[in-house]
Length: 248
Image 1: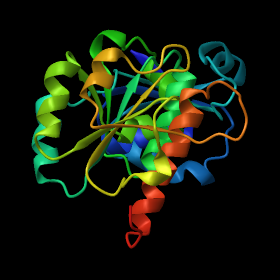
Image 2: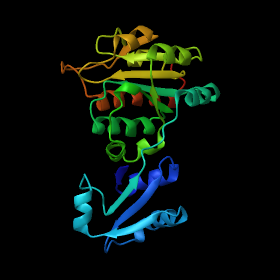
Image 3: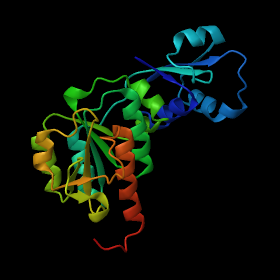
Image 4: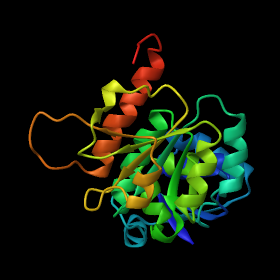
């Protein structure tokens, strides 16, 4: 079981219903006027609601931003690749995000929050690299983790070409690419691949890329964190899609 913290994450989990929620804890004496809609949802779904003292809640919680609300839930159910594949076949201009080398829950959560804001349909991660506390990712993402499909894939050499045959272009972001991201058309169906700050993109993914792109930098700072780099490139994808008259 996982322990979700805070109104935003708990509300997102209850709305998506991709977890089984065993019990929701509320701090004793908490004003309920701002969480009435959440309490109504808890009652509607027949979830047990228990009251804890502030001291009991602080001991149970991992963070200090729970705001008097905790929920004990099952891990989030994730769609498999075949489900995503069928959805992509029917989608118009899908935008997928492939992440490698993610090293901590907070970095991943920040990335997911931006991904949702920029219109990413689903996030692809290598199955053997998934070793995160879903509740910690949800907290860092402000609930985006609960809504955004996370698809764990076994072998990029098999799964990515299948998506490419559907018409998606695979763009890998690396520091020494020849093309700057502003010089390529990101309005078409794409998979945007980014690696962690330490290792970058794997050779297997690079070899499959239709094009490699880079973020222009005015200072020699080496590299950016995954959450910062992905935010810059995803924002450019969104900008281009909102201004479709540009030529590339």
